[in-house]
Length: 229
Image 1: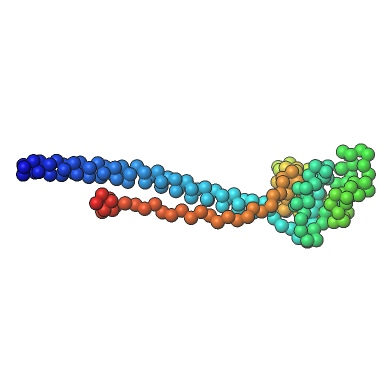
Image 2: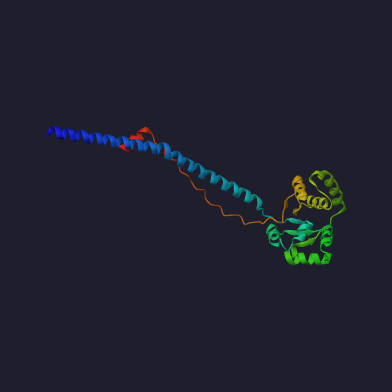
């Protein structure tokens, strides 16, 4: 009887040891395999948060609010006035902003719109953008500066009459709206604020709180033993 009990006891002890060994192996597997996967997931989530923040910074840069600002429209912008009306209005949104149109730009526009007169173009612009539209002639001084700018930025492709528009923008501290790449590049070279009427200005997105990622718990040898027992 006692021998049978001893055999059963030994058998139970062996089974217990076997179960403990298997449990240790499972815990080790969890520690070596699952933890790195979680860490990779956490690092990817952190990377996504960084990308979102960078995107918001870029969007914030493109959405600049203007007030008491003069806007000079290039010929291509006036030709796009019907199609890009919403974009132009969004760019100009602000207090005491004005659109300035020069005789040079009106003359260029008439070449593309044969039936239009200077007066009809100005009237149409006022119907679209309100009484903020004003006439502002390019002076002889601006034309002289334009000639110098044309030579200076010849490598960027700046030509007449765009060089005069750039000169006018510099001298009256105005913002240029155009889709002409050479004029945009030359404006940037001169530190003149320039916007493309083809680009849709979106509302600034609401800031969302970045997700806080808790650091993954690392298990020590003592922790593993505690889990087993």
